[in-house]
Image (cartoon, rainbow, N blue to C red; front, side, top):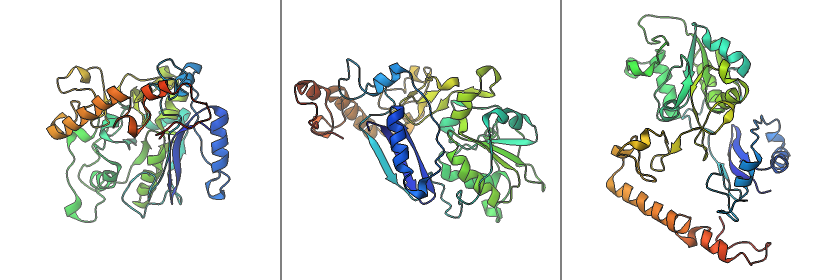
Length: 341
């Protein structure tokens, strides 16, 4: 159907992103839901402009068959992964299929998080929060979602053993959020959580309910649905939202953001970051420069040279080469190109 993207299948459910024409995407979704176990999918649709669609389907002078470099995905590239969890949490006892927190519509979100008695928690990782967040949001400073359970135990003093308790660095709480780790017993607060598309919040909210929290809310559809529906003049969102495709980041109305991607560490970088002497396209950025060895950087440079020369990493025998595609323009349209991925 000439769609692209990625799908994850796990015992707890299905999650993914697909890109293509409305008719093609609908056919794929209908096919998926012919399996009774996968009926009732919650779908978030983001329309694109005719210009973006043309880029996606390769109708550009610099990309005669494959999509242009600005396309979110390759139209001939769909990956389906089988995993133990949709998002790795590390606690098999947490079952979002059994219970989750209360969904809050984007139109009701501002009222909830503006209440001073509500603790707003960003469930994403540091590199995502760095470029944008909601006002008053607490940053757990996690490098991966697996660290979230330990942060909750420490921050809310829920650990069963003193050995699991630790003080929290002042930087983990953003300006305007109360210190949740103050001494003395206290009631567990009302919690409002959010993430990019709402998936991580389902698992995080289930975890908090298991821990004894009574009021757990999460933003339905995540940040993306909020940015799509809420006008910028009414928004409590600050900055841009990191997304896991070639757009890198989006703004209000899901417009293309300003951030680029460091291919060394897959983190978003700003124009200011790219002025740093630690920035080298395709190799490193200020956030990974000191963590990458010279050997790793040299391998990255070699990959970048291959891509510049052939259009693919590894040379023409590892994927489509623009030069070979141009040479095969006379081949019949129904013939499959060699070395397709």
